[in-house]
Structures are given as structure tokens and as C-alpha cells.
Image 1 (cartoon, rainbow, N blue to C red):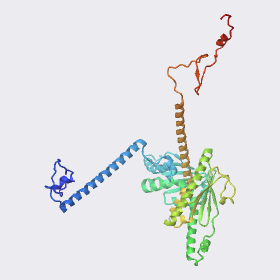
Image 2: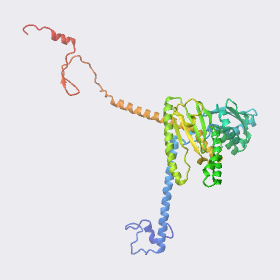
Image 3: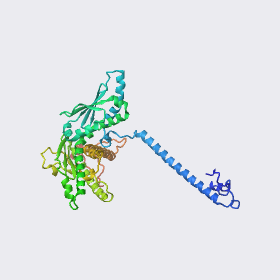
Image 4: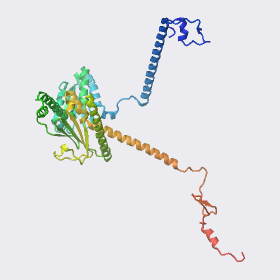
Length: 463
């Protein structure tokens, strides 16, 4: 700061902090020149530059410390990436399948140029209840999808969404879906190897097949609800004043029947359509008794937390116009939901019934992509449930291990320390006084039989 050329010489010692007697460069007051406007402006500019440089230096130090802390954390814990457990909630696709489809096409084309009979290694992957088998036949990669309840969901709307998803990609059906729940897709490896964008898009869609298979039935019902909302709004707009609600109610038309389908072993799902909403009722079944107790407690807390968030969102939506989250309710296994009481009986679940609701306000003006985004977290709620269930068990086990360690420490501290060099001798007879814990003194009776016989012998006369 003091090296600026526009600062007068007589003011430089003052700006450098040398305005004290005895320091080099000090000028008495009678030798200092009177400050002018230019000199005051120069000092102000110098002070601003100094503060700016100081702030910059402080920010650089903060950034440096953050980088060093992050480097130390990575060295200690490794790279902070999503682990296998995060796949349950954070990721929408099967990462092993995505990696395989993203790397195998290029390698297959290279191997075929060297040896025409080359083939990739057959791999078997499992994405929860959906299984995949990846193989190759010539320049084509084969993906076999195995889902035991495939026909149940394909007939309810998943077939349409799969055809829309795969039509624009170099993918064809090698084997149509069968009653056993299997179908095979053929992927052109040459096109995937030539275009990186097509390869990434194809790998992303195929790694998300499980989500689209489960989302299909609910997407069809949401499309119906969106169309109903548009018809009702149009009828309400063109109706005679005072008759808007009746016109909107008549525009709804025929309401679809309840759609039941099975998604997992001993777990069913029902889609119940109303005039202004769609209810998703699913059963939750677990085998272990501990898992059942934890799962029931989690579902109850989930419903209560959702109800509190819904009430808060309603209060906020009155002022800001934001959308309300879907309401949620939980029923015990013995308490069958009202919408299912008229349906045929089924095997009751071990945990209970969970009901999620999507209202007409959530689909009004929504695009097809938005409808899929609404249906995905609901139909894949089982992943979210398992994620928190396993983490709750892990947390409880860690607490138990910690408490058990504390008890072991307390027991080891409560033991009486053993005296070094002391020998414990059991004495049969002693005439020394003993002390009780209360402080009372007493002399114990002789316990040796020889001593007792000696006292009982008759004494000689004259003694």
C-alpha cells in the first residue's frame, strides 16, 4: 500500500504506521504538510485497497483450509461416493447394469474385429425383485429380464410405457413376454459404440426398466385423472353461472374400477380411482418378527409425519399457492381399508396396509414426464422402507453393543482387587475377636472337634 506513487511522501510514514516518535521516517507535526484533498483521497484509496487485499487473503485461506480438510477426509475415509445402501433411495437405476451396458458395446465390437466368434461374459444381475441376464450373440447384446409378476403389470399399463421408451432406441424384442415373466431385448452394439449419446441414453433407460415396469399401471390412472381434470375445468368454464359444479361433476364420466395386481410375493397393490383423486393401497409383508415390529412402528411414524407435513403445507399453500404433499394413512392387518372391504378376500399382511393419495391438484397441467415422476416414488416406496428399516436395525445394534461394552466396564470395575502376595488360609479355630459389618465384635466358638473333646475331659482331683 505504501508503495503507491500517488501518495505524497510526507504522508507515507503515516500510512505505513510509522507516525510514532523514535521510529524511522517519523516527521514532527511542524514539518508535516497540511493534508490536501488529493492526499486524503489517496489515503482513502490506499485503505480500501488494503482492506480488499486483506479480505481476499482471508478468503484464500478459508478455501485452502477447506481443501486440506477435504483431502484429509478422503485419505481417512476414502472417496465420498454413494455406497451400496444409497442405491435404495438415491439412485433410480441399477448401477451394475448401467456400467455393463456403457462399457461392453465398445469392447464387443473390438473383439469381433479380431475374432468373429467373440462374445462377452454372461452376467446375472439382480435389481430387487427384477433379475437381468446380460449376454451377446454376434454384434448384438442380449438383455433378458426376469420378473415373476410381469404379466400382471404389463396388462395394467406397463406394456405401453415400455413401447414408448424403447421405440426411439436401437433395441428390439427378441422374445416377447411370456407367462413365466421373462422377455429378451436385443441391443445393436455397433450403434452404441459409434454414438456416445445414444449409448448413455440406452444404458440409462435399460438400467431403469424395473421402475418403468412398476410405474406403468399408476401412470395410466394418472393420465385418466389429468384428462378428467381438463374436462371438468372446461365444463366449469362453459357452464351457466351457478351451475359450474354440477357441470364439472357430469363431465367426469365413468370412473374406472379398482385395479388389483401383485407386485411381490405375498404383496398386492390396488389402484382406487375417485372423481378427484387416485388412491394407491399396498400391503407390506415381512417374515421376521423383529422386522415386523420395527416396520409397523416405522409405518405409523411415517403416516404421522406425513400428516403433520400436510397440515403445514396446507397452511403455506393458502398463502403461496404451493402444492400439498400426498396424504398417507396406515392400517393394521386386522383393520382393512374401507375401499377394500367390498373386494374379494385376500391373505392379510403381517405389517399392515399403507395408503397414498394423489389428488387432482397434483396432476393439473402436468406433463407426461411429471406424471412418471409422481408415480415413481410411490410404486418404489418399498426401497425407501427397506432402506430405513435396515438402518434402524443397524442403529439399534450399535446402541446395544455400546451399552453392553459399558456394562462390561462396570462389572470389571466392581470386582474386588486381588492383593499381591497374600495367601488365604482357612482356620478351623481362632480365639481372636471378629468384627461384623455393623461394627459389632464377637468371639467365635471353637470349630475343631479335637479342641472340643479336650474341654470335655474330666479333671483330676486336687487340680
